[in-house]
Image (tube, rainbow, N blue to C red):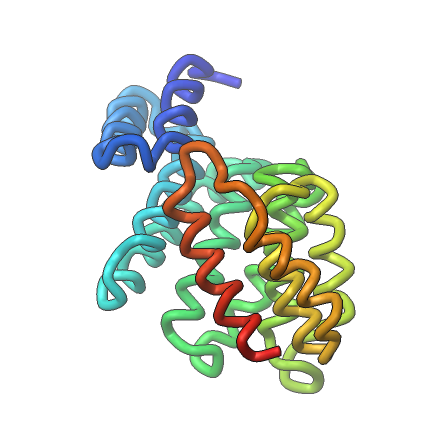
Length: 226
């Protein structure tokens, strides 16, 4: 990997995004400086795509669409530079999904295939990336997309993918939350409850307590529907 020292520095800043309010800004600034020197560094665009995903997650509702769109732009550029860029493929798929969610599913059916394509590419490059992230994106896609004949939605496939994600991230909150939602889609309340109960009993992740609390609130809301 080229510019490995900068990658390590930026990766740490992103991972510690909750420890200081300006860590994402510092990460973005470091990547901007790098790209001024080497505009062909594909992984830098992938990490910029990730940064805008995290910005979107904590932004007011009216700002989310624009932030995810920026994440898409960075991811697309990274893939244009190198179709085998793991970071660019994965975070492009993620931002496509969130961008589509903000627009509304019926306005975003044309994004389903690109999400699948880039998540599958990320899976072939490293299926374990970000706690089984490629499998998680695919599982979420199969759970949320409309079913046949409109699209590729399939809750059984969703559970297969999310179960694989869980193997790589057994303590990662979203793997459990998305599995619970997929099981609920199949009306399997018992298995859904197992994952929701795990979420509410699990210790908060170091450095990511704020994000985990949000996920726990979602789990509590789902439990009330059982």
